[in-house]
Length: 339
Ligand code: XIL
Image (cartoon, rainbow, N blue to C red):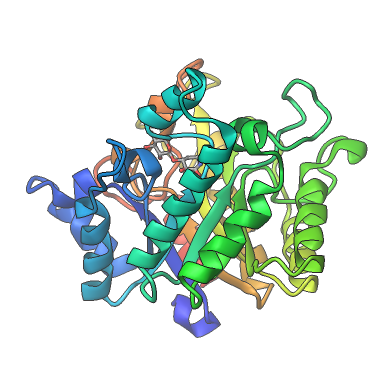
């Protein structure tokens, strides 16, 4: 159905579930319902290089091989991020045994090693992930946040894109972040989408090789809903810079308090209807923008979703398009109707 619009429809893949003999439905749905896949964890630095100097490619290679067998494109996730870094790296920086000059060369080597290994096999790379703070952080004025900015300064972003391009000239290089679905959804003077827009515009002006902006799309029904126009406007403005866009990690969680519990009927529970409606809004916006290349969900079943293990105060869940028993939900039906 996506093909009719030139749109790829994807999911993050949990490699443990994919390999589990007791989970045939997981494998079938990955194979049959999606035209692009993303490694949920196995291409992250802590997974690839748990011990300094020795890379373990097994799970990442398996994902790429599976995608090839299934005729699917791969989104590479992720070359540079402040989270899920190997302990040897963060410890080395903390105890002073790795100084900032060495850190920069370690980063360069990592990007070069990983992007070269999969050269020609990755459709879109998330080169830099979540470099920008949120209005609810301290200080609330938007800034470059996290490990890499703290040690190398904001210049690491441009460096990362240049190193990635050199290692894999055919992959589309993306900046990826959350809370950038729309402009002006919060304080106009402190608008994260605008900050990211200005950042990528500045990178392009300096000739930095960036091809796209990925909007993760982690939403929650406890927050206000977007409408299609707001979201398509944001995609359109990024496209106006000459960039592609994509939704890269869509899920819409609900608080399992607030009158929602596992097993509730989607037909009558307004929170669950809101979850489905948010998938629909993001997908409609993407369909309305020719340069929105793909729509990827961050896991497709509540049986294997990062939400319950991550958002537990209060407990949250029910964020995906199939329930825990692999029954398609209202969100799945709406997406299908959209396409
Ligand atoms: C999450 C995974 O889903 C979890 O399994 C892992 O424990 C933590 O990371 N933004 C991203 C993703 O870019 O890499 C994150 O994935 C979710 C938020």
